[in-house]
Length: 294
Ligand code: G1P
Image: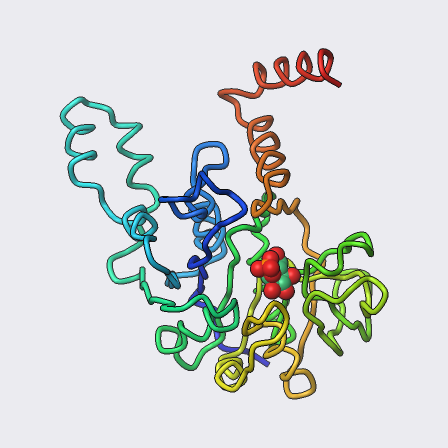
């Protein structure tokens, strides 16, 4: 059986980023930098590497920098050109998708992740699509979303990236109730958003990569606010269980929760230690810091 190809990705980027104040007072949290590129570019690069062609940003107020980042920067690039800075010019232009392939829609009110995804319904249309939560940065040679797409191409239906977490952390995530499970692919038979550890159906949690069928929009349309008084994507997905295939994939790669200070710093360290320009000196610095403070 062949399933329709996944060509589009939705990036909800309307969040307020309150955990990073004051850094995010006048700047989108998705523009915070891990090594040399903003979080949103890490996500878009991952999507592009997996063959995604259209990038749909669900923006909020004050997020123009994200749209501008994926556009030509005429003044800057003209200056770089006139100074003969070819490498820098290349870096500025590398992230610009083909004309017409960036779409921005606005989420006028912060009503939750489910609502943000629903705001993209006209741009997505009637085809399966990917969702990226750019706070979740996945490091690895095989793009996480590409792994999800490969599974989707075999199974159809919804696919989410999952990882095991300590039980005391289940109330931070969407959690799976698991049916058949071969240790890599788990059949999803139930989903709960942020359950307390005592009632969580498992410790297998969703991280911010999804392949969703367009039917999700019908469920989102009728969703009432739930956990955190927000319209939850997890609740709409839960309603699709039994109607379509639904799997969780234990992806390969390292996930950093860049929505927290700790995860963000860990990501910077991990990327830095792998970067040929800085790794040697960074390693020496980290060692001496640990010796004096650790
Ligand atoms: C969101 C989702 C949750 C998922 C998590 C992954 O929560 O609602 O199901 O597990 O992202 O990072 P948030 O982190 O926005 O509270």
